[in-house]
Length: 96
Image 1 (cartoon, rainbow, N blue to C red):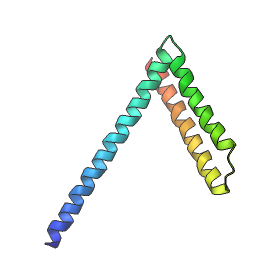
Image 2: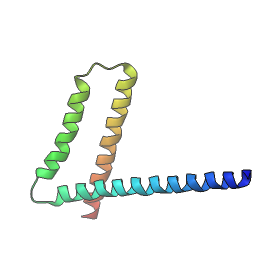
Image 3: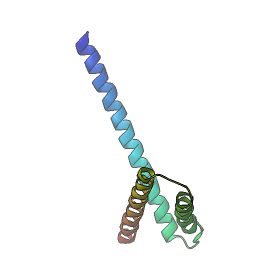
Image 4: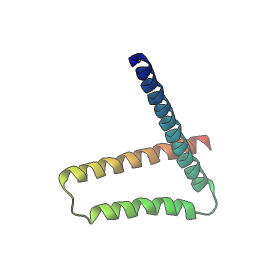
């Protein structure tokens, strides 16, 4: 009975891992397609919306009282977001 329980746990773990991977890849692809459309469209409304979202998030983080650990996590998250956005921009421009 223990072997079947272990096999069941391994199968469920593999299914969850694969579903999370597919979901993450779909979200990243959606972000990339949205950025591609924003850069190549003649109307700059979507690009303005994407950039203003970053400033609103930054403004919300600046005017809060935070401890050092939370401020560090917010800074790391912002740097990661900026890096991913820059990487996506380079990728979209290289494909154009």
